[in-house]
Length: 261
Image 1: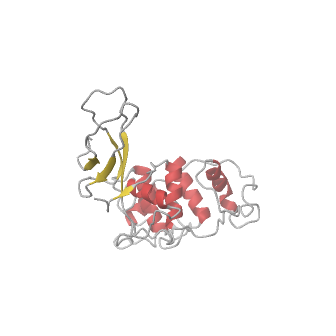
Image 2: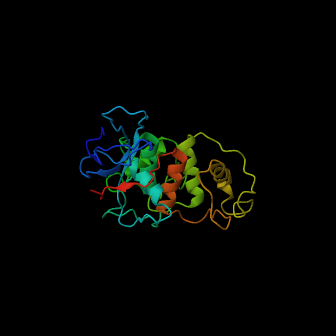
Image 3: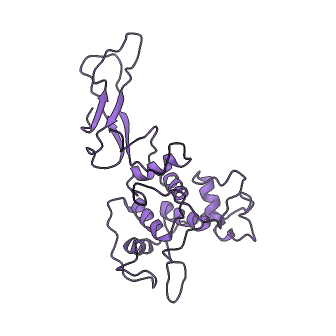
C-alpha cells in the first residue's frame, strides 16, 4: 500500500482462478499517521492479473472511551473526529450525552465552515459576556459573529452571546442552516404540518422554516414519536449528527480506532 502507517495482512498471496479477490486485513500503526481522517490506499499488485484493483478506503479514527460501537451516534461522532472538527471533551472521552454549549458550538461550526486548520480572527470584545482573555473559544465566537452565523442571544445593549448556555434544538436548526447553506439563506415558508410540536402557536414555531428545511434535506428526522422537540436542549452526539449530515462529512464503515495496533 502507499500509506506507510498501514500494515496489510497478508502482504502477498495467490488469488484462485475462480475467485475475483484476495481478502486483506488492514492494521494501523497508531503513531504513524499525521491526522485522523479518511484516506485512500492504493494496493499495488506486483504480478499480472486480469482483475482491476480498486483503491481502498481507509478510515483512521479517534477512539473515545465513552462511545461504544453499539451507540446510535457512533458513526457520526467518528466522522466528526475524522474530519478533525473535535478531539472530544478530554480524558479520551467525547461526552456524547452532555449538553452542547454555545461556546463549543462556535468552535465546531467555525472549523467545519472554514476547515479544521483555520485560525479564527482575534476576539474583539463584541459580546459583553465573552471575555477575550478567559472565555473558552472566544476567538471562535468572534469569528462566528463575523461570518454572520450568529448575532448573539440578546440584541442589547449590551450585546450578549451566552457562551455557557445550552443550544436548543430550534436554535441548532438555525445555526446549522446558516453555516451549511450560507448566512443569507432563507428557508422556504414553513407548512406547520411536518411535526406536531412545530406548528403555529408552539414555542419553537419561530424556527419552523429552518427545521422543516433541514428535515427535507435529510439532515434531521425528529424523534420516533414523530415530534421534533424544538425547545429541548441539544446533546453533543445530536450536534455531531447534524453537522455530518448537513456538510456531507465522510462516514467510516467499520472504522478502526487509534487504539488498534
